[in-house]
Length: 292
Image (cartoon, rainbow, N blue to C red):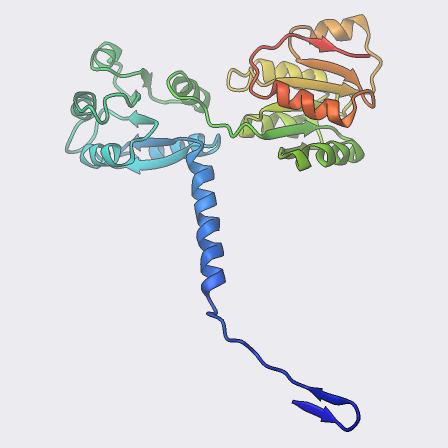
C-alpha cells in the first residue's frame, strides 16, 4: 500500500491462479489439432523388415501427407493393422516370423481388417499369388516414389485438406494481393516466387487450386502447366491463369484443355476470385473458361 497526505492511497493485491492450468489446456488443444490434421491425410502401415526400404517408403508417403506407421515383422504388422485400422498396408513378403503371405491371408480372413487395401512390395514377382489372396496392388522392388504413390492412389484417396491454394508468381505485390483476398476466407495460401519452386510445392502439397502467372523467368507458366499435367499425381489439380501477357492464338492453343480459367490480371474482382477458387476446389478435368 502507498499513501500520500491529501492525495489518497493506492492498494495492490494479487489473486493466485493455478500456474499451469492455461498452459495445459493450450498444449492439449494444440496437440489435438496436430493429430487431427495428420489423421486427415490417412494412415498407412508399412510392414517391412528392411530398414532402408521402410525409411524410404516413409519419406515417400509422409512427403505427400500420409501418416506412416512401420512394423518390422509380420506379427507386429498383424497387431498394428488390427489396432490402428490403417487406410492401407504396404506389405513385404519376405518377413521374419509371420510371412507376408500368411499376414495377407489373416488380414483378409478377419472381418475387422478384410477391407483394408494391401499393396505388396517384394523382390519376388508373384503377382498371381498376391492378387489371388486379395492384394490390391503388386510392385516388384526396387520401387520408386511415383510407382508407390500411384499404386496407393488407386485404392486410397490421396490426402488433401481441400483448403490449400498455391500461387505461383514472381511479382511479390501480386502474391500479397492474392493472399490478402483468400486468407481471410479460410484458404491456406502457399506462395511460390517462380515456376520451379511452384512445381515442387504443387507436387508436395496437392492443393485444391493453383493460381499461376505466365510471365516468369527461367521456368515460365507454360512450362509449369505442361509439367503439372504430365504428372499423374497432380494432373487433376485445377489451374487458374492470371497474367498480364497479351495472349496470342498460339498461346491459347498451348493452354487449351489444360487449365480451368484464364484472365488478364486486374480484371477479376476480389469477390469473383473467392467464388472462382471455391467453385474449382476439388474439380476434376474442368472445362476451359476465359474472360477478357
